[in-house]
Length: 225
Ligand code: ADP
Ligand code: ADP
Image (cartoon, rainbow, N blue to C red):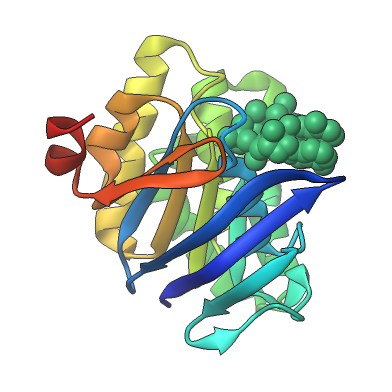
């Protein structure tokens, strides 16, 4: 687990400011949601934390360590995107194992961790299937599992439910909440969906045109829209 702190982060693309003066600190183990309309800078913030984007100015700390110069693969961060990209030729178990391969985990330990994460996402009966034999919701659960199987310090999710139909979205959202309650990984979740923000967040960061409008608990943010 780790805290994540952004200190006056700016990102400018060819003279256009995508995010401006972004400062907040997510404490260890909390679930924060970045909420705002398309183009307000949510993904840019998330990608900067992951190391997929470089800030134009400002500082990023994970676990109180300055990350500005640390490459993405050396950050203990896992990210899940809207379009869960599973490896089509691999089974669910192999897809989950892929999240661990980089880490040279011993086979016995690997099996234990795969089964643990599969149970916690209710996909343990699907381990021998290929992605095309799964529903969209099941595939996204596998993508979530692959990201967290190595127990990263920080979990980043970019609109992970937006490609699912309404029922699956509700189910997967509930699974995600349970998963967080169990693992308590520091999580930052991007969405434009107020219901998702409301049900998942410890704190909501409301963004508009690259700037923070408000930071608060769901009730507070909704009392004063
Ligand atoms: P989102 O679903 O987050 O709104 P977008 O469709 O805006 O995604 O962006 C998808 C990808 O294109 C991202 O990697 C983003 O960095 C990039 N992108 C977004 N806007 C622009 C732009 N104006 N010029 C170049 N690349 C962009
Ligand atoms: P959101 O995730 O909230 O949809 P983004 O972070 O994708 O917003 O984009 C914020 C702003 O930055 C938008 O105006 C977008 O067009 C711009 N932008 C994002 N990525 C790029 C890029 N690679 N090149 C140029 N502009 C970009």
